[in-house]
Length: 111
Image (tube, rainbow, N blue to C red; front, top):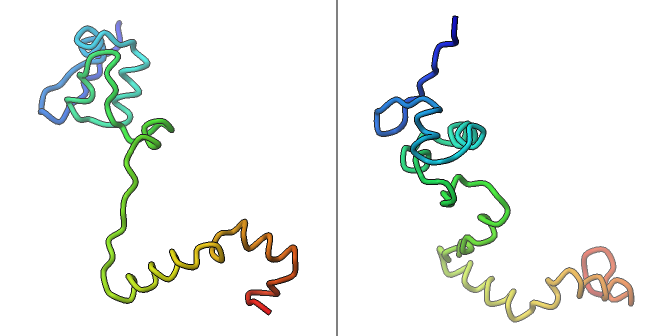
């Protein structure tokens, strides 16, 4: 009276059990279950042990991604960006904090 083996269908259309994936990749049972919980992409699931696939998690993976640069859509945004860059110290929160402490700013505006 054994348990029925659960088969997981991957993106390539083939069905695998956890034990078959373990033999192909060299990973442990828990690692395979974790991969299956994140994605069903065959390339990511069947990747060998030790290779890092991008599952969209992990602090290091997020920090290594290049920052998204916003594109300037119109001339008004471009003018505002130049204004902010030229007057950056006022928009810097620590500079504003220093101004508040020496009483140059009162509730949103300069005296």
